[in-house]
Every structure is written in structure tokens, then in C-alpha cells.
Length: 345
Ligand SMILES: [Zn+2]
Image 1 (cartoon, rainbow, N blue to C red):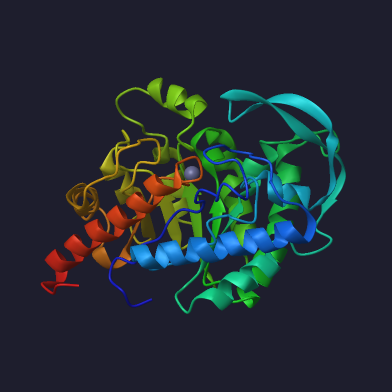
Image 2 (image 1 turned 180 degrees about the vertical axis):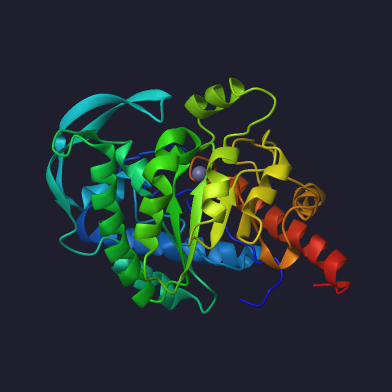
């Protein structure tokens, strides 16, 4: 990738209202069978077109073919019973009814590989594909079989590695693992979380990302953020471990957050996907605000390692708002590129 400050979204974009109820997570599909396959492909095409029109450099699928970033992947695995449900506390924050692990988990066929091939056909730009991370996966399940968070995470890491290798073969340039759970379970991150990520990424030639955030802009998350105080130092626990890891890129939340920027110093040497767009605010950032957020980070990350991005996924937003935020990300990045190179781009 030769563009200075290549822009990218974290993952999800809103779905069209003919495909799923807008501005809702876990929204049920409005289509079924072949019509659903065609509908998700059409939505994926639109997601690509909207990113390109907005000037985004690294293209994602906008998660148009999945209902939810964790659940949809797990639904494709065997060993998990979606009819046996238990209520558990997710990320130590809110209760949810979740499926049960009833036997050995395995991936009997590829989950997203056909979707990734379809995305590859839509653009010559670099493409990125997001998968859930092992710790975040186990946090959305009740485990009756392994009875060990670590053992179940290891099985998922192995499965993710199989999927990631096939995504790479399908032409995916960057593979991302979403691990919001890294901001909650610090002892697990230390004991096995990073090792599981490395297992999931083992042997890949594609660049690898870990995305660690404070969640979608939904009420449970904004309420939680309000309890975190004036300085959010959660990254302080995982960043030194990630700096030592084989993962290439760290995606973090920044704009409008209380994350002290100097924490970025802890991952010096890694590429940094910096959130310059607030996914919880209904206001579209100005290009100047985006440029300021990115410029401030340059004290702790070299410009050639900075990837301007969003704080998290945009799924719960209206489509108009999401489009506006994509354009703001590009426009703000263009301002900074111009400052850094002296060339209008
Ligand atoms: Zn996120």
C-alpha cells in the first residue's frame, strides 16, 4: 500500500432498509433463501461503492452479509446449540441470552470465504476482512463442554486460523480480529489472550489487525463509558503485550474518547488504525476535527504507520450519517496529507 495515511473503516456499515431493520443490532433479515443471498450481495456492492465514492482507501464489506459480527461466525460452527440458551453477562456489562457450547467446536465449511471472493471482484483496492477474536467469541457463549475459557478460546483460534488462511487465498489483503473483550478481561489478555490472537494469525502473509474498542454507540456501552472516569487507561494493559506480538496493526478508539494519546507510544513500531470518527455521536465531524485528531497522534506514531479510521463499526447509524462520516474521514485525512507532503491531494 503506497498511499500515505490510507483510510479504512473498522467494519460494519448500516444495512439498506429492504435487507434488515435499520439502526438496530441483531436486526432480523427481511429476505430469505436465494433472495437473501442476492440481497446481501447487492448490499455489499453498495457498501463498496459508498466507500469508494467517499474516498476510502482500504475497502471492507461493511458486514452486509452478517447479522452480527460475533454471532454470525459462531452460527456456522458445529458444537454450538443455538436453541439451548443461557443468560450470561457479556463483557461484564449487560445480560444477554446466549447459545450453549454442547460439544467439540469445529468449522465444517468456510464461513465468509465466498463473500470475500465476491468483495474481491468488486474492487482493485486493498480489501480488509474482519473476524471476531477468540476472547470476544467465548464471551458471547455459555460453555457446557470445555468448562475452560482458555481451552475454548484455543479451539476458536484454530478455527479462525483456518478461515483466515482461506480468506487470504481469496485475495483478502488485511485480516482483522475484533477483540473488544481485551478492554475488559485484563488477566485473560495477559495469560492467554494475545497468544490466542497469534495462533489465529499464524502463518498468514496478509497483514493482521486487532481491533480493541469501547463498543458500538449503543446505550449499554455509553452508560459503561460514563463510569470509566476522565482517563481511559484500559489499553495500557494490552498494548505492551501487543507491541511484542506478531500482530501488525492495532485499531483503537480515539476521537471523543478519554483515551490518553500517549498510550499509543506503548505500541511504537506497529501500524496504528486510529479512530478519528465517533460512532456514538449523531454529529458529522468536520474535516478539521478529523485532521486534528490524526495530527495529535503523530507525536506517538510515525506518519507512514498511521491508518485513519473510525472508532468502531457504523452499523447502528442511519445511512446518511454513515456516508457523511466516511466523507469526513477522507476529507480530514486529505488535509493532513497535504500538510505532511506539501502536495494537494
Ligand atoms: Zn469496535
